[in-house]
Every structure is written in C-alpha cells, then in structure tokens.
Length: 330
Image 1: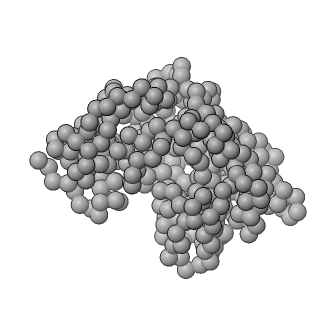
Image 2: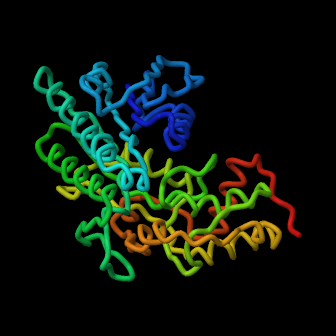
C-alpha cells in the first residue's frame, strides 16, 4: 500500500501518520510506502518502509503531478488554510483551498488516461458548507448554503469530489469534520480556535480568551475521533455512498457553557478562573452562521463514531497530550 498525505505537517496530518504506522495496514494490505507533503516539509517518521517528505504547495504548477507520480493507492487530502485566514485573504483562500484541490483531481484524472488509475481519496471538508438559516438539528439531506469564503471553497470541492468519483477518475469520500477540540499546540487563525484554547490553556495553568457568549452552541469531536474517521473512510466500501460522496461526521453538540462546566468537573474552579471574557464581534459573526447540532445518521450507519460528552473529550486530551497526568482539583 502506497499512501500520500497532503497536509502531513499539520496536527491531524502528524497524528494520522503515526496512526497509519501503528496500524500497519489498510484493508489487510501492508503500508509499504508513505509520501508526506505540506507547505512546510513534514518531519520524517520512524517508519520501516519507504518514506519521502516533501515541501510542496499544491496550488503551484506541476506540484500535484509530482505528488502522485508514484501513483499512490490511497490519498488523504488534508491541506487547507483555515476559516479565519480564508475569510481575511480572499485570493489565498481560493488559491489554496479550491485551486489546489482541483489541481490534485486533474492530476489524478490525467494519470488515469495514461494507464488505469483510480485511487481512494479521503478529503477533509467542513461544517462551514452549511449556513443559516438552519434548523436546530441538521439532517443528512440539508442543502449546502455556505456563508463564508472558506465554506464556499469546501462546498465546491465536495461537488468536484462527487463528479470526479462519478466519472471514475477517483474513488472519493469527503468527511465533514466537526470542530476538533481539544487541539494540541498553540491557537491558529481559525475562527473556531477558541473552542480549544479555553480548555487547553487552563489545563496547563495558562490564561485563555473567550471571544463569544457561553450560550454559543457548536458540534465537536476530539483529535482522536478525527483520526478514527480518516482511517475508517480509507477502508469502507464506498458503493453505498452513490453520488452523495461527502458525509457529516458524528459529534457532540455542546455550548461554550457546557465546555466550561466539563472543565470545572475535570480540573476544578482554578482552571475555569483562567478564562478571560473578551468579546470579539468579528469572530462572533462568523460563528453565528455555523451549524450547531446534527443528526449524523448516515455517518453513524457507516460505522463512524465520536465522543458523547465533553468530559470524555477533555480526558482524551489529557491522555494523549498531557502524558496521563490528570490535573489536581482545587
């Protein structure tokens, strides 16, 4: 099995790389070669097979052709600039999130003209493909009505994924990830970054800024769940998907207040006191147009699973990122 990960230097990409190495196979086929690419060269993992790490901007000429030159059997397309940056920099958002994706799909199509080639391609989409007005609970048949440039770029990419799959150029599956919390590391430029920072920083004794009301509700899953989504998407039979190639992943609907209450239960009042309220109208406006809760029956029926409480999400972060050191209660 030859695997290409585009966006391999990011948090999800690094965790996915480790998970694939630990798993060692996909549908019984051993992982023998990995190509890891990103805008910054990913670190080389400890992998017994062949591995290549590349600094590559998918939106630049000939890069997509270079990335698929070894004809990978499985491609994970994780690369994107995040919501806040895509909204602030219109041209960059479309160049990276849309033009880069189309370049990849076209490179795969053209490779198949020379010799039959239909790789499995797992694409990470977003809940930002949906926009208000929305029902309180969004079902699997909800129309795509993005209200941000980022959401529009992801929605167009979902349509391209379905069309290129329909034509047999690739075997695509798009997974609409919940907001991933708790993300390790430092805050990024995503409008949703605070959903992680208000938990991550207090858990290590640092202050965090909350830019929205505690009544804000959103759809969440942990990084561990996100990796399980990607691995499952790589292995499932895609024939039941038909033309609906993108799937909303299961998750947990919770308010910011629910997050804070879970933090209090797990880490105590001292952690909660480190959250500083600092309203940000621009962030609040972006978040206000995002969906809040889903009935992800299609994803669940296909075997995708996520956490059922924010206490569990916090404990996953402690286990995976804080070396099993449960914070002392005060």
